[in-house]
Length: 184
Image (cartoon, rainbow, N blue to C red; front, side, top):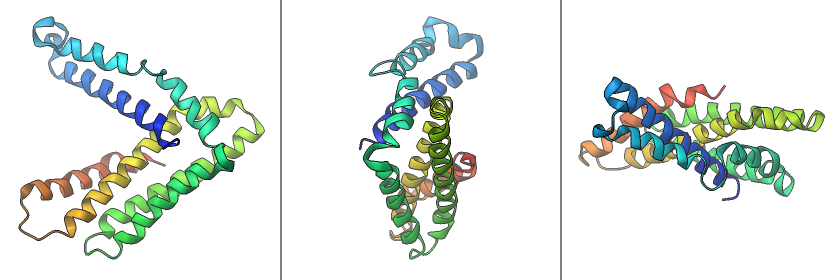
């Protein structure tokens, strides 16, 4: 919980703001006028990045405090949970399609975490410089883990469970092709 609190707060409010701005862009000039209401969504999403500690502070908390908390045990335990899901994916027909990219993202995130810890030992300012990007990578890994869990659950259901469940597989595939692959 301590590890993921800054990730969830900052990560989702960043994604919300980015989505609101993209919505505004889709509407072009109309996205800036009051009658469509999108300009209000952009303002509301932006303030969420500031409430409860700015997202920059959340990123600094993640790297500056959470990585070192309990001797570095928090990310290790989190990564172990993800590794359990990767192993479970190999036991589910069709599961490796989701487990393999998650395993690759996890391996890259572990390397980044080890590298960042080593760099912080040499120069404490390295943590601050990398904190926002590190938080985004942690968010993508956590989302990949959740999509894998949803995909595995869906793969274990009966074949005629409906389009809603098949759509989850499609979105999970899209996520791994577009977002989780950026953890490198």
